Length: 347
Image (cartoon, rainbow, N blue to C red; front, side):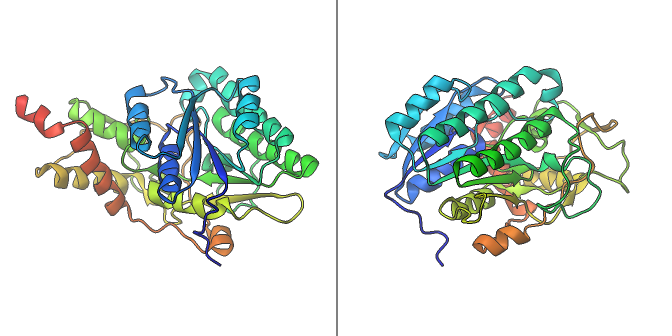
C-alpha cells in the first residue's frame, strides 16, 4: 500500500495552521497538490511575527486559503465547515505549554476543551472522512513503565495541559462511538526544529545564550538521574501525520490513538551538548551555555519515551532523524533568521 498517496480531490482543513506543526503540515500537503484551508487565531502566546512568517511560507500556493478564526467560536467554526465542506480535518489548534497552564488555566479550557468540542460538533453535523487531532505525550504523566505504549493507563495527568489533552481523547472516542466519526489522536513527543516554538527549551536556551543570560536546567544538577526526553524532529512528525490522514480506522468505534515520537530518548544534558555543538558549527566559534541547575518544576515529568510499534504497523513509518541532524538544521535556521552574525559583529 502506498501510504504517501494523498487524495487530491479532498479538502484538508488544518486548525493551528500558523503554528509549528500546522504550518509544516500545510506546506507538505500543498507541495503534494492538495487544497488546504488553514485556520488560526494568531494569538500572542509567543512571537506573532514568527507565526506570520510561517504563513508567508504558505502564501505562494494557489490552493491555500487562510482564515483568521478561533476554534472556541462555535458559530464561526460551523460556518467554516458549511462553507468549505472539508473532507479531512486536522485539529492542531490548542493552547500549548505545560508550565503556562499553571499560570493561565482559562486559556486551556477555552481552546483545548471548548474549542475541541466545537470541532467535534462541526464534524457531527458536517460529516468528514477523517478527523485527526493533536494529543500529547504529557497524558502519560509520571508513568514509570517505558517505553510508553498507547494502551498504558493514563488517568493520572500531572498538569492541566495534560488533562485537557486526555479529555480530547475521551471526547473524540465518544463522538466516534455516537456519530460514527473516524477519528485519530496523535500523542506528539517533544517536537523541535527550524521555525519551532520559542517557548520550547531548545529555542529558549538559544535565545538566552545570545542575550547573555544563563539557562535554567530543571534536574537539580543530577546527571545520573537526568531528565529524559524523546525529541522528535518536525519532518518526522509531518510524515507520520501525512501517512495517517487517508488511513482512518475501520473498526468500531472508529477511534485510534498513536504515539509519534523518536523511540530514542536522550538525556536532557546530551541534548544541550548537541545544541551547543550545532550552534558552534553554525557560527564557526565555540558556544557553551552558562548553566544554572534548579529543582524539577510542577507539571514536568522525569522521562518521555514513545513506543512507535503501532505507528509502524499502521503506516510503515518510524521517526529516525537524529538530534545532531535536527538541531543542526535548527541552529542554521536560527542564526540566519535572527541575523545573529550581524548582531554579534556590531557588538
